Image: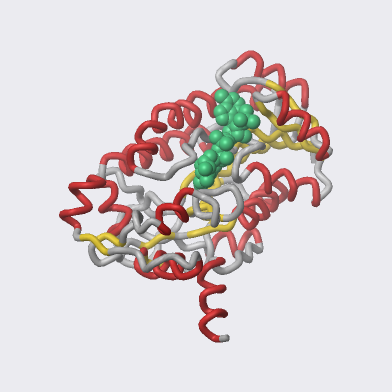
Length: 312
Ligand SMILES: NC(=O)c1ccc[n+]([C@@H]2O[C@H](COP(=O)([O-])OP(=O)(O)OC[C@H]3O[C@@H](n4cnc5c(N)ncnc54)[C@H](OP(=O)(O)O)[C@@H]3O)[C@@H](O)[C@H]2O)c1
């Protein structure tokens, strides 16, 4: 199929392009950068150079490409993962997701695209017992940044899934890890963990759902080929409490064990969002993706390798 990818050069875009090419698809990829356009060409991808906020240029690019499918993976996330850097990046990131996304969606519609997939987020379900599925309501009453993201996810998914002119698929990814992410050994969280700056908050009972970027890419390609319109949670099989994943992660990095701080201290240092992530976040259940996309995600890299190291 001919597939247009916006966000093709980011953390998830890179493995996505690789998987699309492996599956024999004809790929056109958006970038603002001439240098990245050259790299894309060398990979066998046709580059389209435009800024996502230039609605006319995006329309020209997508109408010119005449794709059957559009995949949107646009973000403007910071290289560091801290409360401050995420707050500073939030306005542009929101604008990219809402205004940028709307420009791509409008262009796709004008080009007669029949299927549109976009990145969404798995971890904003309301806190509660057990794992969340695609129907679980989102956490609109959570801490400020989480509640704001729950509203954004709702808006972008509503704009897509309510569009009568194309088949929309929202892919709610878990925490992405792998090369080029915050959680890679050379990434920002690894650095913070080595310096004991990434603590377990309170009881560490917040549950995080993970996904390797290559598994996210594989699921995305399958969804582009034969997914049903609607939402898919794209997460691995074993959501873990912060206490579990962070301890194993520190061990995997040969870092000291993570420090533990009280909820009161976390509130003082990181605010309500830090407490939410550390103690309240809810894991996601990937049964629908497994059933409909034959999704077979790998186990969390550092959990497997820590277990192998313990056994040997
Ligand atoms: N992306 C994620 O979902 C994700 C998940 C976990 C962690 N992170 C972390 O976030 C940091 C950055 O991640 P990333 O590599 O995905 O983000 P990025 O480098 O900012 O890439 C985002 C993608 O969006 C495109 N884009 C952004 N603004 C655009 C605009 N105005 N017009 C057209 N395209 C635009 C970029 O294209 P061009 O720059 O080529 O124009 C790129 O393909 C990393 O440190 C990573 O660890 C990201």
